[in-house]
Image (cartoon, rainbow, N blue to C red; front, side):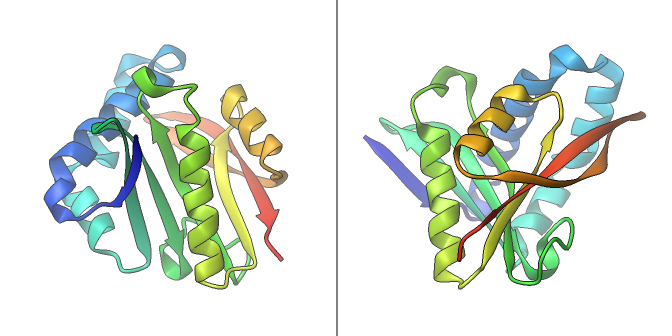
Length: 171
């Protein structure tokens, strides 16, 4: 059984633990331990995640598989977006699936939740940034109808990396 639930402040510790684990599992092999630690120490503090959870223009959703926490989605609208791509767009900032639950279609379910929310909010487009070396994610997003519309810098510690900006029109 699969269930998607909106996250609240009561879920902070689980969100923090899952964020650090998934980010490490995905990106540790391609980054130095120092750069990874510096990033994790800034990106997933209790204070930062609390602020993100309290932002009314962001939403988080956990996905459970047979009552086990398997991943999460973070979406942003309006001023919560990390960049201004289009006035009436929704940003998918994170789709994280725990390594034990990959290849079960859970990422697509969270993607569909983001599309559902975008339509409910009358957004005309959906966009995201994906690391240029995360080939499986880029393949997934292209399959979902996204096209590259730009790029921006992303810093992993001291290492400047490139995220591709991908967008899908909804109307």
